[in-house]
Length: 188
Image 1: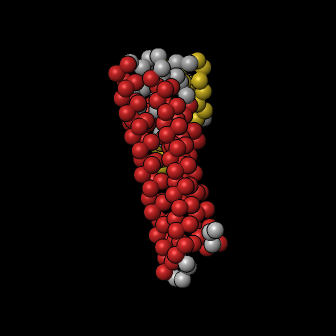
Image 2: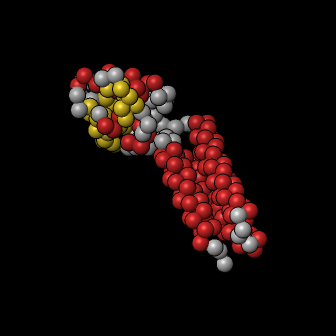
Image 3: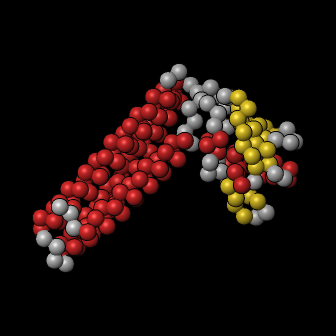
């Protein structure tokens, strides 16, 4: 049995762990697996009249085919700023400005690059697991404080084992997500 006070910390840990997994999914969407995807450009900030603005708020990103992206700015004056932002993001992509749109051809991924991407994916997965461990530690610290404030030792142990169960569940989800993304990248 778990006390109502402990349930608050367990639910908080669960929500934070869900957020860590969502962040992992967002980061992995940016990993280029040889197919064009607008998500590859997430996080690119364009200088829009002196303030950094997400690319998606100043242009429309489309995928005309599996190997290219097309970026149509809402204002033509942004073409060069968009080009500069893409170069500055160091994604290994070369934007081409045709006066109306910025086009990006996605080069095929070499086997060596695929292995580098797999390492990057594992690293992102490990970062997510570190987040889980930090969330678990924070939850356990809060529950231990409840123990110091008078909650019985048995209830503290039950709550700690519930946080560990939640952590294990989320860790398994991370492993599955990382494995699927690795398979996607390593498949020719």
